[in-house]
Length: 387
Image (tube, rainbow, N blue to C red; front, side, top):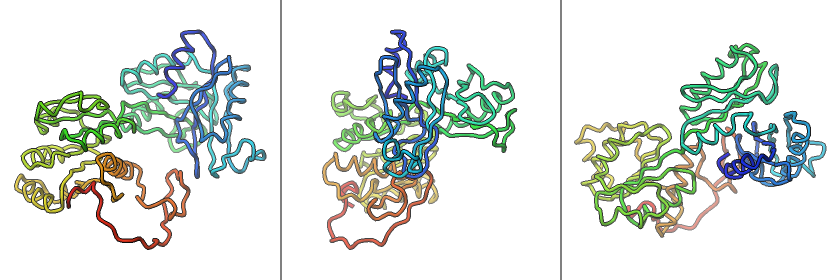
């Protein structure tokens, strides 16, 4: 949704009618996750994407039909389609797309405003079963707008939407016609628009500069923090959302950290590392990575234990941080670190795709590795920083 927001705002300001096509289900090697959006207006303009390009034409035609009739419709595209060569997914997956009229009547302005202000909001939409297709309930932490057609269904979906929103999860849930759980008469797609996850980078150096740009492009809200005012300047980190001059542990102690937060300690200095890592390990952060050699980490581990940090907590640390990509430059090292963050977030193997047998864009499927191919020996990854 975020990628098409400026265009939607313009269309609404102009009074231009449009239709929204949203991926509400994906199986196999589907190129876009649920929540991906494409919008088409009455003048024939299109923005956004629901696939790698293989079904956009068919979705465009379906969207123009929805604009003409005003009636929502659900479409399925995949290799089983009779017209697979023209509208099927060449990658072999299957996607379900809900296409519905967009505009002020469907609480879209309020949703866009909440997203822009980084206020959590979830949009629940009926995608099938014994409820009006396309009916929508918008859920904030303190209020709701709209209805799925039945009060008890609204109440059940509202509670589930708030739970998913707290975790930043988008999912399809199933209910009975009156909101009964563990029933399957109504399918509801709940799309969470949580604020962007945070990446906290401690240490204002060349690695931090490269990582801040990579993380920002991945959708993280990036903060760079260092206690040295000469280095902690916005000019040195133009892609970071925030640059703070403070002792790292003091900054972390007053920063909100949740299960989606990533913490990267790149200071490589014991007088910073131990205190900020002790604080970090008290948080529910999704990832805590720290730069340094293996010898440095052994010394750091001893210092952490002296501070009362347990072995179970120390095991949470990614140190040396990053995947072994053979990185040398700060920019390559940033890719290595980002790759490990992504791998841990989605449960990937970190192995070459060419050696795996599962679908490339597997949704919840485990990956099976093919036999490893012999590789020549080479120096270790620079992301591990002089281990």
